[in-house]
Every structure is written in structure tokens, then in C-alpha cells.
Length: 319
View (cartoon, rainbow, N blue to C red):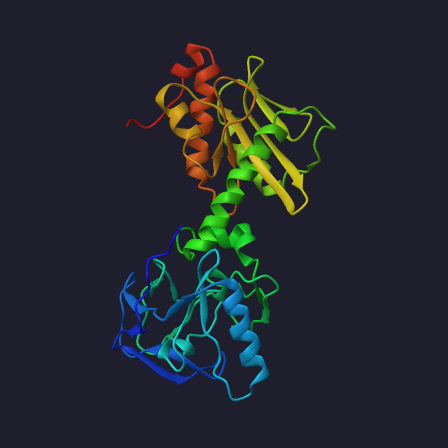
């Protein structure tokens, strides 16, 4: 996709000031209270190719007097190089930032910011260069110790910054999810030994178990991978962990019907379509899982296969 042309220069909200930072050198700070969702930076400059960017960085490395190359990955093979000396240069990294991306060039407050708070970005949300690695000393409770060019692959960061990556990195995430969904669809329906499986994390198993155990006449079984729950010998929930090369992924398969079946199967991440079952849906149970929604989906699945008498005995909120 051809990126839209960037502004020629960087715009900065008048409430943003530069001060000494406890994170590193100087940083950006709020000179006044700023509401969540307020655009405070509009990045500008010129777009260059990956080859041009590599040459710029190499030239800067060879010249100790050359300015630092501030860059953001906008699209694949399209990198924004900011003009030297802009205020945006002083935005420090944090693993729990107060700012995030809301478009190719706009940066907004992630939460309400009080006067005096430092305005930080997670560099991993806009830096996708292969081999990038820099130490992090942000000091936040979720500090990961290092910023890397492949941070976009981390499931917990994908969940935390959903929709707030630069376009190139969001496209990589979406493509990876599509590939993973196809793999999961196959792996979640194979016999023992056809794929590699791992133990279901205790907390996830307990969470699904608590939902299923609250439904009438359910039985839990150890499956060929993970656990299954049945009512009158009909399976309505199955949780298992598929062990991929880049780490395990835990999924839940369940049943659905009517318009909701088609809607879930076409919704994209975290849902996917298993290769088995005309009424089956798969769901990735990642860091951003909504357990109330899981409980609703599992209960709906129970209602698809359970006898009408048992379904009638459920006490479910109306609407």
C-alpha cells in the first residue's frame, strides 16, 4: 500500500515541553493536564526506502557530528525520517507509555496525563527494523528490559496496543494472525501425534472449568490434547495448547449456531474456523481475553447441544 504523504515538519501541542528526564537525558513533559485521546504530536519529514534508511544510519554512524536519525516505520519499505532537531526527538521510550500512535503520523495521549508527567512512547510500536535491540531503563512495572525490532510479535504487546501500531507493524501482526489461524484450525482438529501440544496453563484450564462446571449435567474428560467438556456425551467445549516453534498458543473450540456462527467465524482474531464441525468456532485465549465473553460463548455452545429441558433450566440474563 502506498502511504499517504507526511507533513513536511513536526507539529507539537503547545502544552508539551522539554525537561530533564529520569528515564534518559531530556524528555517530553506535559506542561498542563491533557485529556486521554488528545493528539499532541503530528510527525512529519520525508519518506525513504529501507535501503535509503540503512545508508542514512550508516553515514550517521561514521560521522560523530551527524545528527541522530529519528525514524518511524510507516509501511513496508517506507520509513519516515524526521527533520533533525525537532521536539519529537526527545520523546523517550517506556514499556508503559503515556502516548501511542493513532495513525501513520499522529501520536495521542494513551490515558489522562497530569501536568508534570513525562510523555513517552513504546518504541516497539513503530520500530520494526531487523536486528534492532536497545536496553530499556524505563523502570515501569512492565519493563521488558530491552526494545527489539520484533517486539510486534509479542502477544502481550499485540493485545496492549491493539490498533495503535504504525500501519506497517499492524499489517505484520494481522498477517501473522491469519497464518496462525490457519495453523490453529488444522492443529486443533488433529489426532494425537499429528501436532505438538503442551499442557494447558493452570489458570486458563481453571477459568474454563469454572464456567463449564456451573452448567447442568456436564462432564470433564482428558482429551487427546487438553480438556473437553460434554453434556450427554456431546462435546460443547475443548481447550488445548498447541506448541509452535515461537511459543505455545492456547485455544478454545466451541459450538455456535445461526447468524452468530457466521459472524464469529468471519470476525478475525481471536476467532478462527476449525477444519472440523459444521458448527464449530475456535478462539485464541491470549493475554487480552475477555472471560465474561468466554463464559457467554461457552454457555451458548452448551445450549446448542444440550437437551431442551436442561437448557430451559438455565437462569440467563435477558437481552
